[in-house]
Length: 265
Ligand SMILES: [Zn+2]
Image (cartoon, rainbow, N blue to C red; front, side, top):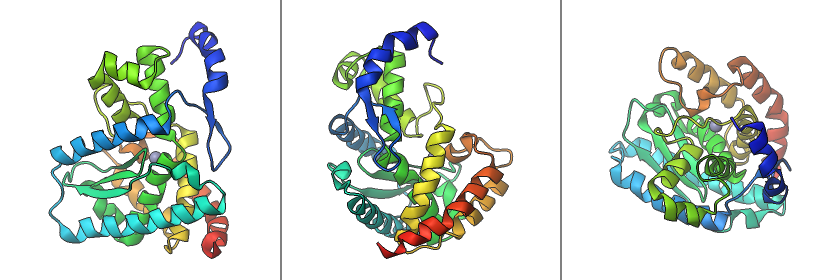
């Protein structure tokens, strides 16, 4: 948590460092630009893939790629319909499945680098389940949630520093902050996605999956499965934030008619 005096001192910066979330119009702290964070993400993604190991389950790996490409297309259509295609500048999408049955998680980095872990696949069950998760995670990247959290993390760790200065000062911590910011890191303490971020990801993710041709009615059904699965283990990124499951499921149900109206774009 920021101290009051600290908040006071950064107000001036926040005034001009706020970007606007393309889709919702919400203001967000943005000390880092996409042109800086996308190359750093691409580099870190290569590291993640190198460590892997990538899943040898061809069927599941193909499922992640197949659904990913459809969601990518849907995102491109959606952003074009909003006149916001330039938000996708620099994106170079990739969709990979990492062999880690204990990790019930998935994430998308700035620039469209997606990882699923095999631990989430039994809950996804099929293409539609993968589309629920994919839409949600991709929206975190499109709405620059990771970038926003990276900015917050940098303020906390480095003060008002540029990304390149932070990299120069402490590259491993900067990389760690990035992984934290997208919901994948472990070492600096959890920077959880906020309720607001989760809600944005659920809402717009539902629209993405619908445009991609999947049935939005399956999103609340997926969350029911996730809730049942959640008991006892370390919560994945999805479960780590606060919309109670019943609220989340109710919200999703409420957004289905809106999502269906996007089928025609
Ligand atoms: Zn999320």
